[in-house]
Structures are given as C-alpha cells and as structure tokens.
Image (tube, rainbow, N blue to C red):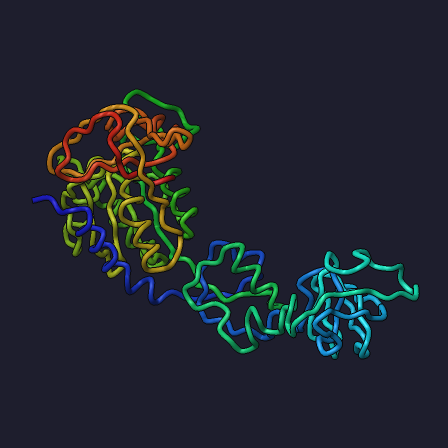
Length: 402
C-alpha cells in the first residue's frame, strides 16, 4: 500500500532531525546574513531608542510651564537631530526635529502645527511662541520604548530577513552568529543523461535535474556539492558514495528508485538501511529514504517535474520545520480556470499560473512528469487531495506560490 504524503513527510523530518540539531555555526557580517538562521539568542547591547527623543517636528517643553490655557514661552536654541542639546530652562521652548534628543528638563513636545506662529523663527532671532496645554510624555519616544538594554532582541532559530538585520544594525552590531547550512551531496544518475553543452547523440537527453535541484536547494539555504552524472553502474555509484558521503549531512539522488530492471540506486544500496517505496502522489510516487553509512539519504525520481515536486513536498517543508528557513511556501485558494481530473487514491500536484486579478489559476501543461517547459511557465503548484478525481472549472483549489 502506498504511503501517504503526510506520513512520508514525517519520515523525512525524523530522518533529518538529528542532522539539523547538530549543525555547526559561523559568524558572518550582517551583509551576508540575509536568509540565514540565528544560532544563538541576541541580547540588546543598548536600549532603543537610546535616549528620549521627539516623535515630531515641534517644540520641546516643560509641561510644568503650562496652565489650562497653554503658555507663551520664549524660544530657545533649536535642537537638530544628532545634537546633544543644552538643558531646557524654565519658561522656554526649544525647536526640535523628529528623532532629536530631548533636552534635560523637557518632558513633552508640542507639534509645530499646533504652535502660534506655526513655523520656526530664524535661528538666533528673539521670539516667543504660543502653545496649547500639554501633558508629560506627549509626542516623546521614551528611552527603551522599543527594546531595553539586556532584553532578548532575537531568539535562536529566527530566520534573518531585512527587518531582523535592520534591528541588529540599529543595536550597533556588525556581525551575527548563524547556523551553518546543511551540506548536500547531489547525485544525478542515468546512462541516458548527459551534461548540457556536450554532443547529444541518439537516445540521450540533457540533464535538467542537477541544475533544477541545485538551484532549488541553494535557494532554500543548503550548501550543494554535485557529483556530476553517474552512469547506471551500481559498483561505480557505490564507490562514489563511499568516497563522498563523509563530507555531507544529506545525500540526495535523482533517478534509479523505481521498480524497473535497471534502477541503479536501488541496486547500489540494497545492503544499506534504505527503503524504496511508493508514495500516494502524482508526480513523484517512487521515493527512497534511509541512510548510507549513517548519512541521511533521500532518493527522488528521475523525471524533472517529479524530482522538483519531491523537493517541494518533502525536503523544503521539513527544512522549514527543523531549521526555520526557508520560509514556507505561501498557500492561497484560487478558482480553477478549467476542469481537471486526478487519479483515485493519489495526491496530485499540477503546475499552474495564478492570476491574482481574477483570483483564478490556469493549468500549465498536463499531468506528465517530463513537462519542464510547463513547469518553467508556472508560478504555483496546484494541489488535488486524495479522494478527489474530478474538479470542474470554477472549483476552489489550494495552490502554493513558487
């Protein structure tokens, strides 16, 4: 009986849990941290903001100078952003810019729009200003109102995007300790497969899987080592694995996992604790999972769409769950632009183009696992769950944005 998609994903998660937990860490400049995952908690070395500052362009004042009708105050020296101001004397109001440090003695800011006149006098000019009543703290950003010194700014496991890196920069940090990426040994198999750029003789095809999977894995934050194309010789594949396995946290192969007579991966790994099975999914039904000499191993099918769907359905979401990156695919609901059919008892994944202005998804190509052109012209995966065999146009379906 075929394994469900959910059960196989759980098996992949359990396979990789130890490798994910045991990853090393490295220190990188902030500029290199985008998309990486924090290895340790980060405590704030200072408060943000680091001083009381003005929320508005206006006048810094002492609220004690005001009565119910407001106050008429002498204009003091202005406070530009970035300056260390002198203490504010009683009975005065200091022109202050947004973000500028509040002078000692001041406890509120009156926006310039509420002042009479509603424009600042020229620097050095003798002037007074009429201001309405204020309360302590009005239009003031208190020290530490964002985060206080010593508080946890980010926790280990946080994926670093622009906002997180911006916070670390605001705290004055120039580097960050991140988890080292998992190292993947990627193996493409098949006598029929040749490298792009070489001569294409009868019966041969160019290898799309190596480039396709390497790009997907690098985009997901993995470090990928490609072995090149391995011919359908079990002994040669076994020798390659023995020579390269120690440098990897995970081995991924494409091809050679079905039930045919020349399935090289099955033949090479027959003595290893690797299971070759069928998952109730189309495309990508044949799967391999286990360990080679103790290193986690995943065997994906050889057709290009099948191997990418296998990555998207199993490896990518497991990385999200265990590592915190890459981010999960955005799931949406869209209406089918055309009817579709799906095999009974299988979770079908079709390629499609989501048209947000219409809220619809157009299928690209058929259900075949060789349709690379259709895949390249898609921006989403369309999910048809087990038990659904026919859907009419206009039916809502779940899609994952690519």
